[in-house]
Amino acid sequence: MKKRLHMWRLASLFAVLALILAGCGEANISALQPAGEVAQTQYDLMILSTLIMVLVIVVVVAIFLIVIFRFRRKKGDNSIPKQIEGSHKLELIWTIIPILLLIILTIPTIITTFDLADTKAMEKKNRDGKKKDELVVNVRANLYWWEFEYPDLGIVTSQDLVVPTDEKVYFNLTASDVKHSFWIPAVGGKMDTNTDGENQFWLEFDSKKADDVKNTFLGKCAELCGPSHALMDFKVKTKSREEFNQWAEDMKAAKKPVAEGDVAKQGEEVFNKSCIGCHAVSPSDARPAASRTAPNLATFGEREKIAGVLEHNEENLANWIKDPQEYKPGNTMPSFKDMDQEQIDALVEYLMGLKVEEK
Image (cartoon, rainbow, N blue to C red; front, top):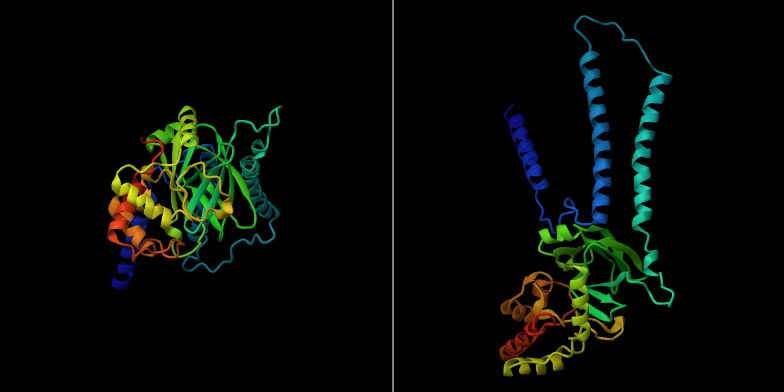
């Protein structure tokens, strides 16, 4: 009796915890708080399928309980109930109803699948042979960071994806090493990034929902890709179309950064000797994708995170430079444990000054 009571207590505890955890989730990363057309459509499909499943469960449980209590053997009653084996009526009922439920779920799912896979607008051109105004972003996933290239604007960024609100944004997805998966939970379902092909899809970012999360959504890798898979995060910064156009102009007009102050100039020298071979410091860097082996640092001083996961401050940056494997095991950045602390401090000063918008 005590053992059974103990099991009931554990079951009750887990049920309460599951109920509480089901309500957890920030609006900028929760798929249950849709912030765009794609996310809302997928959420509606999820609710529809859940209601159908709950309806089936309720009906089955109700029939099960009715059978148990109504047709249980009564004391002293050894009669055999009426047999209904081979009832055509019942067979039709439990065959037709599941088919109808399947049709109800299948039709909107197929329509939605084709609508969300429609990326023909990416290739449409105007009468002059130039592409139309649709924004296209080339996403390239790497161990363990993200690169975002705006091919029609001549801009390359890393870790921070900047997009306009209330319009479709089209994505070309690839990977440079292993399979990853591009996912912005609050805005739309995931899509794989492969090394041997290109996936395409589109998302739309709702301006009102973006305002609620201070115009910043969180993105993640949704495909197990190595020891630091859980740390492969990125930020999505949303802007109005006018603000986005201004951002694009600022990025295109950005010149090679000029270090200010003796310490920053010393850091620039260190950077040019140790880092420039992998990292770029210009958002319009024209190197081919294959040679872009590390994140573009043009806007590093404006980011909210270091390596996508650490708080953006001088101490964390210095620790990251010394030993990046401690914070992201398996990443491809070399360690600089043997670098003088003075050089590291100078490098930190230089990197924190790399800004485009905040001047």
